[in-house]
Figure 1 (cartoon, rainbow, N blue to C red):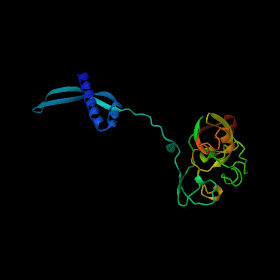
Figure 2: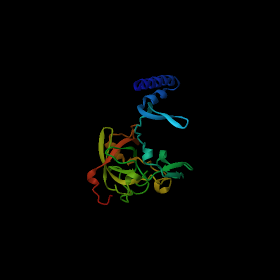
Figure 3: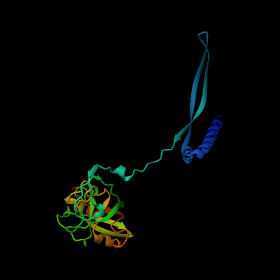
Figure 4: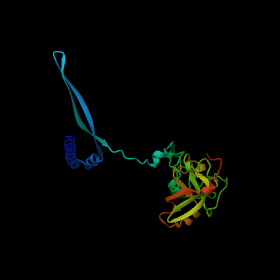
Length: 247
């Protein structure tokens, strides 16, 4: 009897799946993503006659239980590191047209960045570290301007980690090449749209901002469609992280 009931349930669900498929393709996927279980249910039936118990009977039946399969959900970056708010744009003298603030525009701000791994995904942008260039003021780590012939980068606020990575090297990979570059500045994800930041909008939380020398080392010429903005992966050079001050 148990097997017959189970067979009938599966048959009915299969027919339901076929009918639902005509209405919406997703219905079939829902049914096939289930687990069939059975549960025994015992009922006690008591009959009385004139206030006296005449007969007690126990019956046992089985009831199918359909449970959806729970699948793991990968959280997107935005859920791992959420925005802290918005900054209202103010326009002014700006040397980097595409990244210049517009009056009244709202720009997301961040204090965190995605977790650092052995191959951290990032957006690679180009920065001018010299005086009067797109980097704005002197580099945060050194208090001075730098030549763009140096293999140097700035990191988003979360990755900059309150100056912890100042002077340390990271390994950047893209285009089949790898280069080691020194962290000398912060790409500020909290502030922007002022003179100190060249009236540029706040950095996203996943930016590695490199000098032209780093771009050249990765084999990306200035006339390439990738030049200035492309996907890379990066990681810390372990030998440069031996700092007892880090928790």
